[in-house]
Image (cartoon, rainbow, N blue to C red; front, top):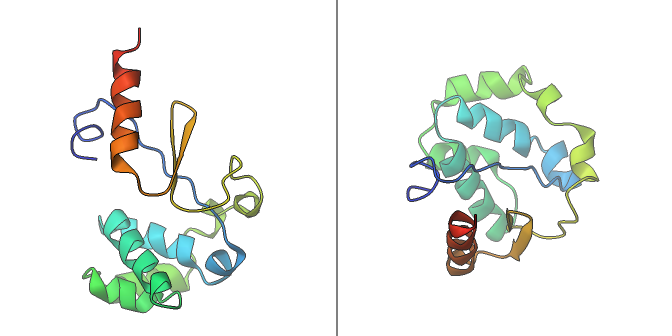
Length: 128
């Protein structure tokens, strides 16, 4: 992110891979609420960590990244971003069947494989 996105060399787009339980639990909306406080990526990482530990725990993730809980809870309670999470997230995921999945100029990389992603980015940057 720092080497490519922050320098303007690469545009990063985050698509929501909608597991029914994550959408019904409000996880995607919670990520948007965390973004209001500049903690989208930190919250997303923390939230995925709670899943790895057994269950989706939005409150633990929010506390873990130091979100202002009153503002976060208000954002979630009024469902400020409910229209941002379309139902299509459940079905139209570009063929993605697992997370994380990355695409670099249409080439799919499944799993957290930074070296492979870096190689694809470098090749794309060098292409005419």
